[in-house]
Length: 427
Ligand code: UD1
Image (cartoon, rainbow, N blue to C red; front, side, top):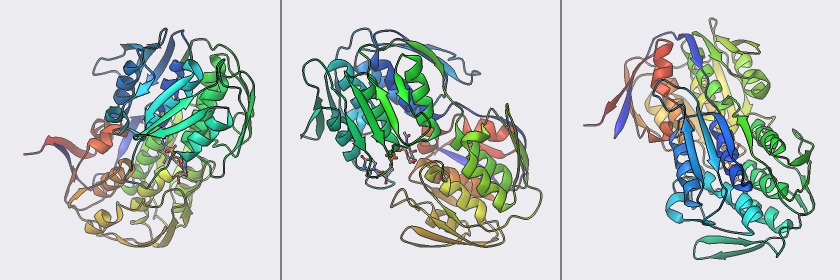
């Protein structure tokens, strides 16, 4: 298995191109199941999770045509053709590798009148149930059965009538499943307390381009007037705000100056506010953002929350940065119950962090030192890379398949700005 070797201490400087957003792509791809016509997505990141989802789509008889597949291309263009669905079953073997597979449930049900999807099972960052996905679809008139580890959803003859659902907890995935299903129903559906992450807006924009009628885009109350048929569309995936935020932390921890080409400040307000409070300068224009940290870093208190609050997917990376900030920072993780698994690894690199339940206290600044580390999820792995960039000596990061799931050409992008990082095969 490959590992990354990072020799810390280089000040990052230069330009990093930001890729298409993984989490947007994972809900845009299943939209192709909603129509017989081709759906073309541009700016798809080259990531293991996207390849996995593509594989899942072929399971339903979807033909995919890929352009932009040369090694030097950033951002692929993929056309999905779902003229005739040959299966509505998502088997365990494919779903267990990628939780986002549950996002085929809503579109398959709405298009074919039935769908059988394996339950995703546990996950390193918490239990992550799917009850809200199922309750929303039930509210639209679906019948749901759980049997032998599978969810079987069925629509009445003639299709889903649609209905109203009030989310007791804000859920990105459940909102996405509900939006995709509600777009292709016989009636009007209303969603209350829906997630309003930028990735949800991206989804609504694609659905609208496909002929869906959605009111309230960008707010937590959405009204969807179902239509009988959706058409194909060509759509460009939004920039990855978490990737951009991660590289902003990487630049800042080295006291560097990096231009994040294509990053969109409007999607990153909470992350950028946190970074500015820490003492990082950020300038943005319509083509990207420049991040500069030439003064001392200051401690700050942070709490994750649904958008427009601070993304839970930025918590680990900001924690690494706070290890180099003057003073005591208090972090609260309100979305997932088990998302401090990077802490013991950061402590092995010299971090001073104490956790109690959902709270973490970070004392800084500390001298970080290189170590052999490994992480159990994607963003946790990135937090170790960020710490390693500022650490004295060499860090070896193992289990980097997590990073390959979510960061397109990580080491290449960091090398572009002067990091000493290389991927080597494990002996
Ligand atoms: C998505 C993102 C993930 C991000 C998360 C929160 C994708 C592919 N993944 O995950 O990167 O960290 O949003 O921003 O887009 N919940 C329930 N029942 C449900 C669904 C969720 O109780 O049916 C709970 C979860 O346990 C969690 C909270 O709701 O505590 C938020 O989860 P959710 O927004 O659904 O996360 P995902 O869509 O899985």
